[in-house]
Image 1: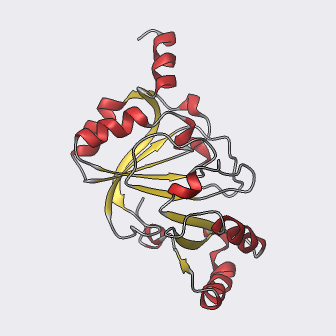
Image 2 (image 1 turned 90 degrees about the vertical axis):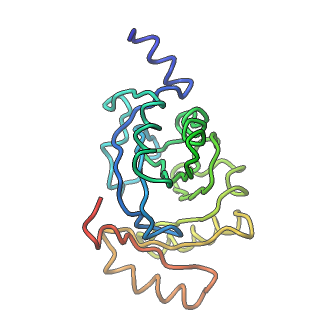
Length: 210
């Protein structure tokens, strides 16, 4: 396919820089323990220093892949599809979610919210980052707020973000994996004092699965 044609299709969301796709158990947040098919889209300029998939940042290293192919693969594995990144909202998610919905699949997204929300989603996990804050409209639509805690100052940021989401949004504090032994006691104590929050753990890492 001609390069210019491919780039035009990526711009429209008809092709996406696919980093990886895999069937596993959702390890985090509200749907933890659920079998799910993950679609990881390349491209992210949010730049979290503790990101565990930095190889996703450069979209140019991941092959543009047609959304029909992606949706067909997903449908053979699970009813629950999780689109993650990178930052998937870097791209237009409308064509992908339409392709998944045609197959009657549940569409979940994990996003920093740094770009406008596109696509049709059954579940939106919003995980804001300090260095590139969410765009305002996504706060009202988020189903869960997942705040990553690296140090005690992140609890202040978590409260600032919690004040912006809708009243039905479920609030999670999740320890950053590399400092979990230090911050888990702090999170547990904080949640016990502020029970509007729940603890989220990366259970897939404890289970040693993707």
